[in-house]
Amino acid sequence: MHRVVEEEDEERSRQRKMEEALEVKSLRRIISAYLNYPDAAEEDVKRYERSFKKLPPAHKALVPHYALKFQRLRRCISMNSYFIYNMLQAFEPPLDMSQDMDGCEDSHLNHAPNDHVFSSQENCCSCHSASVTGRKYCSKSDGACCGQESNIIGKSSDGVTTNEEVQIEGCCVPATESQQACLQNKQTTADHVENDCSDTNGNVMLSHHDWLDQSLRLHVPLVDVDKVRCIIRNIVRDWADEGQKERDECYKPILDELDLLFPNRSKESPPTCLVPGAGLGRLALEISCLGFISQGNEFSYYMMICSSFLLNHTQTAGEWTIYPWIHSNCNLLSDSDQLRPVSIPDIHPASAGITEGFSMCGGDFIEVYSDPSQAGAWDAVVTCFFIDTAHNIIEYIEIISRILKDGGVWINLGPLLYHFADMYGQDEMSIELSLEDVKRVALHFGFQVEKESRIETTYTTNPRSMMQNRYFAAFWTMRKMSMAIEKQSAS
Image (cartoon, rainbow, N blue to C red):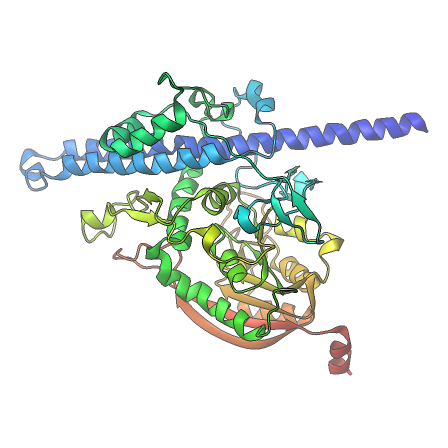
């Protein structure tokens, strides 16, 4: 009997190590996508140059400014790269990244998942953050993963105060050719890098983040780098003045509804609100500023790495400059529109007036919130452009119902652009319900519609583009009826 128990323990240990190895490969692939951004963007510019060179001389003479535009594009790319490198330098991986160093010859990592995150909570706005220190292990087969939660200052959901603060040390990585061009044109930037990355003799120090070493960078598919470009556009939506219109269209109706539904919020006992699919964290932060204990949940490492940096490591509003629109030459009114800078963040997150208890939880929504401890834990659940990310939207609705308290509210805004609807050639489950069916399923799980409308909006759209993809998003408030009320209604 004792031998059987030992064998079972060994098998569990082996399984955990295998899961963690897969998680490291997944994270390494995502970090490599960020590291590959400058080179991939440079290849685009070289492609533009090759096309320009094929023009007849008479046609070239009509657009003589193109050569200068290519150089301006390179400077914009280097500025984006500088932001990305600083973001990666501030990131503290939840896993031992050195354990996969010997496996780097598997450069394409075709079998490693490339977007998911560990099930944990990260420190957000260290002045008022909340988390639980510990480990969670989730099934890899369901797309979740395992990892160690960050240690922060704050109050956990069960009221236990933690006192271990995350310390992020300065570090650097070798500059790429495009970065060096940027630094030559930005003396203040160059001085900043020298201060961060040199010793007292001016010698460049190697980063203690060995996993950021360019020589260990993996070759990843271009689709992974496209996700990095998507993140840059998402930054505008959540953390730039230019994204205010989209935030007013998508976030303001939700915030107004929460304010209306919870008029007597108490600082001593604030209502709780969960935001699945929190992305870069702005909506969850705004809800916290309203006086809620707000928790954002996000599945994507791409998003979590960036949101952690913006929430925890920005020192002032407008600290960074990015160029989010440089990667498309289509539907432009002018080159200046394409090359315009965007300052981020538009506010300093740590000074925004958040409520104690604000946190971000990384992991698959189903894996994290199916835990029995989550049942009846939330006064409100807010989903914005989220429910159509499900393989099985019915399961999402069931979990939202389960984690809400009786009388709790579910506020939703978004389309039904099911993410797995067009996975041709792949055996991906995708349940694609109409809005009518979604409401019918919600009714089955105890929800009652209190308010419903359509809201016209966009998503990470360049406001100066000639093409604007618009959604007529469903917006509703549903209330979870208590079991007693449900029985009365049925009788």
